[in-house]
Length: 357
Image (cartoon, rainbow, N blue to C red):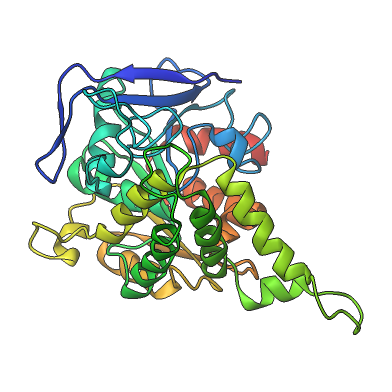
């Protein structure tokens, strides 16, 4: 297994907004080691409230006995700017000694990708053989692949988009309103806005799951229940669970970064930006995803050169990428093994041939 590592950027880190983080710290995990030919790097960009320990939150795809494992791959996952798992964020102290909290600089997915690139250079990784990300992680992976097209060889984008939708922004703003309504938000303490965060997460769950998913797992048995429904307790549980490990200030920072995601910003257009990608690309959508509907992934696959589109059938909506491990693994295996039928040799072909045999 791996332990968390820290990288301290040697110079002020300039953000897209023009502000700077004077002493950027990035927390990250690595698993396995580089092989002799240095062509077994798998880099994971994580989603909104995840951390850099991908083996913890994406088991079934990443793990000792999973498709991506430390015996065959050198796996890297870095915590994103603005989070609360070791990378610089709102809980860091400012020069005056006070916590940054709501005064932490505005961050974009482009800034996150730039931080990943700085870490890559620090780790002396010449090529990323596979870059994979879902949701906010996919947005980061897109920005990185556009900005550094010669570095990324293979790209997997799951349940993500080229520009965040009005629907997604509306969901995020509704969650932020819940946090702002909490009178403890902005009180100067790290746990300010906790109750608002609980409500925000409960709201978010409605976009992460689907009607059928709730019906399947949260319907009360029998016909006599009049209160304390399973679905109600589930919402409370999910809100409390997040509030126990995250904080409202990071949630605001990262949700605003998601809202601002637009690969066409300061470029000719979204479509022209997508055409800069040179990686062999697989785009995966989830049929029941309300937050990132499949038409967004179809749009990506239409404009990224030589991209392939795959779809997961699931009742679990956006969270399907964390639940449907077999479907996801099968799609990825097919992508890496066939390599778009271009017959370009990769380390992944060799590994998967051995597994299939």
